[in-house]
Length: 218
Ligand code: ADP
Ligand code: ADP
Image (cartoon, rainbow, N blue to C red):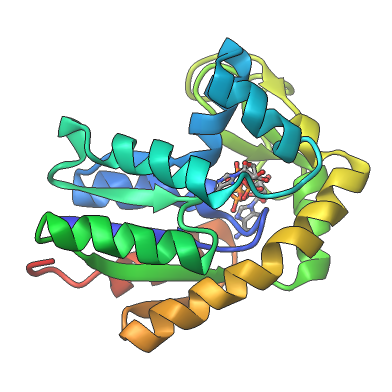
């Protein structure tokens, strides 16, 4: 049973790396951004609240995301473990996660921090494209699809995320990097942090993360 947290600034490569790790461990990916984008698309109360923050590049309030995400983590498919992509993003969220896991006799086995310099992140996000059906991640420069505008894996149309445009990208850096660094420090202090060089190509980053996975009880 392995709970693995993927940490990184917006655009660092969390969503890109999650599938290989999930396949390796045989556990689902729980991606907070996907969860929120689904709620926005469905126009639920959560979606309407979340969108007010997401469209400005701000973090959704801890109380809201903790409630929604921990409920998702409790679902039967995650009982054997999960890859957490995008949660926790603040120290408050990290502590709430630890409390919830501890109550169930679980813990975070590894926090993989994908470290990428800020100047690279802006370019990555500008060139990011996402498949409309399943959120598969592409990049016009570093990871293009075989056919322009079409997902290799499911044939759906590729789209640009609304928050990957202009001012929102810069706001996300300002708003989200400082709390991320606190979360990194938190997991370092617990002795479960593994930092990988996110400037390497996608395969090398995947290799570094996979080699960090320690088999054993968690
Ligand atoms: P995150 O989920 O952390 O926001 P993504 O996985 O969506 O990041 O990656 C952001 C963008 O950078 C995407 O366009 C992705 O294809 C690209 N990307 C991811 N990892 C790398 C890498 N190691 N080198 C170059 N580009 C990458
Ligand atoms: P990125 O790929 O840029 O890291 P995500 O897809 O993970 O972004 O998240 C998109 C947006 O959803 C964030 O900019 C933020 O507004 C919101 N969000 C996602 N996860 C969280 C979280 N754990 N806490 C607060 N807000 C979140």
